[in-house]
Image (cartoon, rainbow, N blue to C red; front, side, top):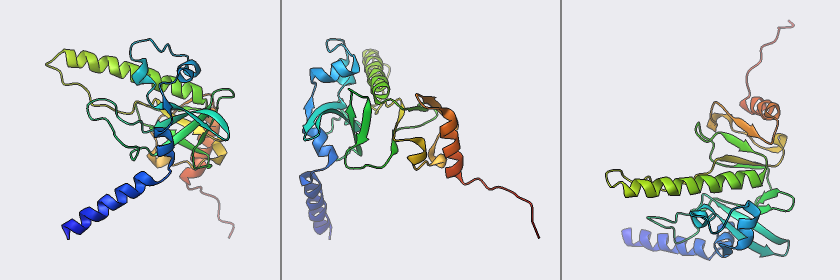
Length: 212
């Protein structure tokens, strides 16, 4: 029974590895490309720049050249990821007009990690990616300091997204208020629009007079 389960598990894993998924597209695209640093306005020679920009790759297809980002970003440090199977979403960004889509999914949505600590909704992909890269660079510096102080355990590698990127108009997105932090900050989008859609999605009961 266990042997059959192991065979099925390996078969499923190889099947997923063979599939042409957005994660696989990201994995096979160009990493550490100078165009990525230029688009994000990051000095490639700066300490930590390579790690800061590792979620981003340069991708060419029939639609042109775009920068694609993997979320969650594969781990690079103590236990690096050797496959793309942990990637849930790949964002394709056109830095010329600062627009983005999700590869393989045309639905308007928010991508990222909204929590009480990372509670910003970004309308601009460039701003979202730049803040993401800065947080990764800051984490790398803090981790190096912690490892140098041997009495302190180095923090575990995390994704470091600064919040979430909004792809599409607020009224096109399926919001899930129950999964969101109590306080949201909006960058590049009117918070009143977000509040209106959150109220709609929450299905708050309304009382009215009885005509009978």
